[in-house]
Amino acid sequence: MKQDHTPILSYTIHYPEFTTDCNQQAAEKINRYYEQQARTLEEYCRNKLFQDAVSELEFDEKNHFPAITYEVLVEYAVTFNQRCITSLFTDQYMFTGGAHGTTIRRGDTWDFQNGSRIPVSAFYPPGADFRSCILKVVNAQIRERLKKMPGTYFDDYEKLTDENWNARDFYVTPDGLVVFFQQYEVAPYSTGMPQFFMPFEKRGRRKGCSDC
Image (tube, rainbow, N blue to C red; front, side, top):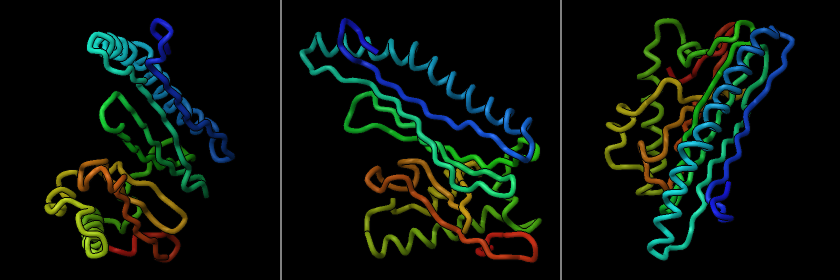
């Protein structure tokens, strides 16, 4: 998008569209969710963010600064798609000036038999203290990473993982769960998006997290 022939905003929004042999009505419900999310973000870009970019351009021109282009990019990756269960994560990158942009990651795991989300608790035995299980593994992995690369996580990471852990921030792979934290929550920007893999082990006919 331009203002007086100057590019000031670029946005690209990718979102999934599913078909399924499990329950097509469930797929349509999930598709509507992602379509609405995309439309809401596009409306924000074309209105609020564009006006912010215009104000930025006026400020830059007044102060003889080089013009910058605001940017929004949304991409997704499907990480699991078997037995009527689909898991994916979506990254929303936004740049509005400064040294670098920011990325927000969202994880979704869907049951295509009924169109509902599957919570992280479903991958643990009934009654398990899955929150403690997850944080125990996360903190252990951070300790090992710090031995190899000091400074890649904040010193008070155990406090920060406890404060910032979000039960929605995970996705599923064929081999296990991946739990993640947002940028700056437990580590500096240079570390990237902190992710922690938790393998499955077979328990009878179902799979559960092996770290509980």
